[in-house]
Length: 412
Image (cartoon, rainbow, N blue to C red; front, top):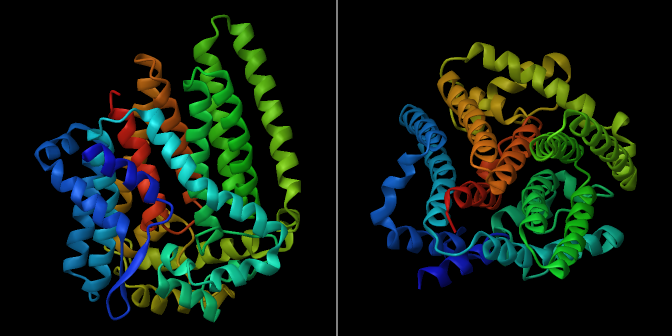
């Protein structure tokens, strides 16, 4: 029973499947299945305290809870707690799972492929993008309230940009991070699986994922990919070749090929060629500057978890330098610091550093290849999070990220 539910949960991750419960409030089927699994595995809950980085994350959540108690908008704080704690539940479920890692990766990949194919199609037929979003079935895969805001033109303007697609996401940058994490899993699967034909099949799938990531038009994703794969590939070469000369030669060759590939991918999407004249470079620097002024004035406890509390102070600083108004910092660490204070951001940073250290150590000492997948995935998240708001507040991104972390500790 548990194994079947875990497979269902894995398949639901990219879709969520929303349905109305009260008025305009919606619930996802994924959340229900996840809750059932947590209940069924509750006797093993103590394993959450067996990992140092998870302990740090729990402390981070505790600070968010305290900040909520003293916040003017407690409803917003409860939403933060619910969304951020959901990741721990995914970690717990997949760590307790009795299903092999490879099978979980295959199920997740198959589940996401329809979205990838939809993105490839939509990119070359952008005139149909809004028609697809307006279709009735999209209300199942995207929160209907969010979808309504998108179609009204109030939020997520990147949906209306040329040469950008986002599948079942209304934020193309968030979509690129989600696909990037699964892309790393697919690449890892190619090395883990022994069957030659499966290797070729997943290589083709990896190329499809890569194109979909590029088609989101997210420069942050491309930069994160280069850094994470560059570090991960170099580490793999250093570990697997004995002689220093070979390590240096193959590392240089790998990085050179990666550079050429990244340069080629950068030119595939016309939006990326226009980056120098876009808001991605100039706008973000102004947003960071204005955000930093707010943070300096609220460095200890932050402005509070409410977006209105942040906007009220941020807009004053934004007007002074001509930055866009009513925007979060576009950096997940500044985002947490700005709203929750210094203790929260330090714990969040330590969580990432601890996860990077332990996964790298497990790869070298225990020779666990999957730990290298965790290292590269975490590094990708870390780098792209430097130019995104707070990806863990997206249930799908959070689910995949914690799934990856949970599977590392799973012995199957």
